[in-house]
Length: 215
Image (cartoon, rainbow, N blue to C red; front, side, top):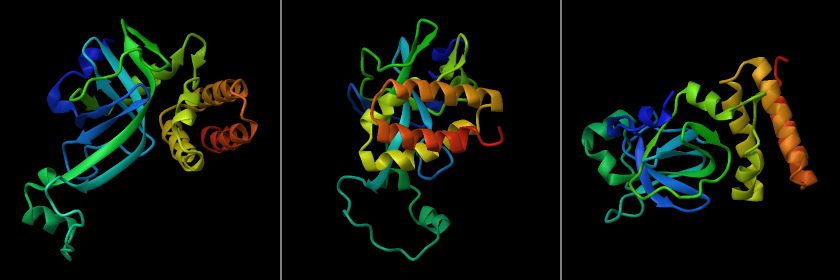
């Protein structure tokens, strides 16, 4: 599977980059609402031309667009009524998703590390398929979560527990029981080498609850 070709068409993108760094990136969504946009604690992919960058959503924010009032005026209307009154709603709001790198895809292979080159502003961002997500985690002897320390380094300490709870639940819904066991074992081994015992225990307990349910 050539994943770069799968995530190249502009009409399939949910948004494009408005910030890029060596740690992560921000994506501005095109559409207003939930249907076409990623959830907190989900995986997204960015087409960078000859490689793909993979990130995990660690935050999002919706604000009025520049030039509009900083505080929206209450409308006392349903979502449907708001959209009827303002068919140009996407142009009135900024819906921004913050992601941290967990890997990249280049020359037919996934690498679970930060990319050597950051994406460019206006690069297109996509919500990947379950097959892509499983391929990202696939290694020769099963499935891995070796990249998780990259996420820990990017999160504020008080954000780790709520994020991990959501993210492990996201993964649990996409892997079979035996595959979840491999993810859990990989995470345990990876964090054991990381060294912060208090935070390791917290993350491991959350992973066990989500990934090992039904085992």
